Image (cartoon, rainbow, N blue to C red; front, side, top):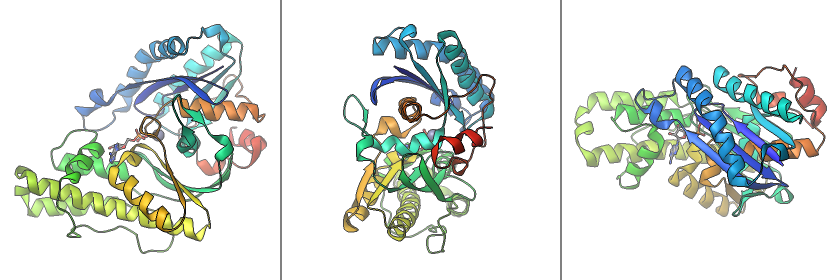
Length: 354
Ligand code: KG4
Ligand code: ZN
């Protein structure tokens, strides 16, 4: 019986899993709290985590029908993320593990995202037996990265964003257009009804060699365009068209670079996870591109796309079974933990943890 806790950004989450099956997954989103500021305010996020952590854990236990004493392993996100937000969840997890006398597994948040597309069915189950080498696109408000996954615990970052993440770009464009926060879902919804097709905005770094991304230039060109055409903000049809143009630019870039890397790395499967992978056009175009290239495509289910503790608990449970070393008491969180610091096997993981 594994209890997982996730608090790397603005969701306070807890989950209970057993034998790869999700028994409960509770997420207290702070979206409304941060909406007023148009972005995550770290200080507020931490205070909210502190308020929500124990009730969220209690709810996860109740929904799973287990009592605290049945928990055999505690898993918590150790990094990367907002320092104080991480620390609040990780310290709570240390406390639970100590009180229960069970091991604590500190996991890497991006590694949890990497395997989230393999959670299938209802109740969710980690289909570890189906895991094949794949090219994984992680796209969220904080990250845009391409990772080659050879197998469990074996992965290599091929590229990441040099500046803004794709989700950040959507959020900033939404703010420029006076839409709500978070902007990604709003822009996505508007884009579904927008004209598009005019190639108004650049496809950043699409035709350059390498697997890195850059989205700050795209945001700037939207700002310049809106400066020249202030009337767009008052005209719903034109605002929708701008959303469609932005979404096309982001999606074409993500899909083009992902498929190119997948072909080059000779993988038969592409996966997508992170908040932005909820984007309808991104899912459609990645699925279509993979189907044309004869590759399997797996996107995380929406509830496992955005931050959640089920993916953390499933990863921690597998690591524990594989004999990874548990975190010693007194370890600190790793806000800038790089995915490449994790290498094959627990020994390397153990060293990277110091
Ligand atoms: O993974 P996530 O919940 O949090 C982190 O950033 O770690 O991702 C949130 C991001 C936000 O930037 C949000 O605007 C974006 O995901 N997002 C979307 C969509 N749904 C969420 N972006 C584009 N289209 C969507 N449908
Ligand atoms: Zn995340």
